[in-house]
Each structure stands twice: as structure tokens, then as C-alpha cells.
Length: 121
Image (cartoon, rainbow, N blue to C red):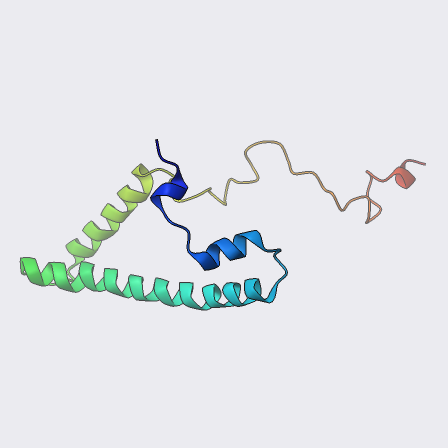
């Protein structure tokens, strides 16, 4: 049985970044490059997928890509993917604080809240 490192070779720069302390200039440069390249790549991928869904596929089949039924079908299909695939699109922010115990207030003693020992005097 092979491990993950056997399947995907780690580039030398990534290995260097993982071995060195996080406060080196190399980490700052790598973080800056990633912060610049990742959003640009996301915009390019989004543009290509939009062209695929609303131009290439409709032209291939022979209908208008902006027909109401096609937009409804695409959005319904994406909704079903998000619903049925693992992860379900992430946690629901509307119910994040409503399910489970409340989060502790770690800053209450600093602000003189009722948790501080001086408030109980």
C-alpha cells in the first residue's frame, strides 16, 4: 500500500516551505503569490464554466443559452450537486450559533464581566 507522498510528489519549494519556520521572507513571498494567483485562477475557471454552460453546450445542441428553461435547469442541477455531494456546501451560517451549546466568552473577565473574580466581591 502506498502513502499519499508516493502518489503525489511534493515540489522542492513546497517541501522547503513546510520545513522552515513560518516567519521567513520566503513564506511571505509564497503567500503573496498565492493570494494573487488563486483569485485570478478562480475568475478564469468561472469564466470558462460559464461559457461552457451558456454558450458551448446550447450551441452544440441547438438552442438559445439564455432561455428561461435552460437557466432553470442549470441552477437546479447545480443545486442538486451541492445538496447531494459530500460537504453540502459548508455549514449553515444562519443556524451556526443555534445548534449546540453557546460559545464561551473569553473576553468577559477582561471587560469586567460577571465571570471575573472581582465582580463576585
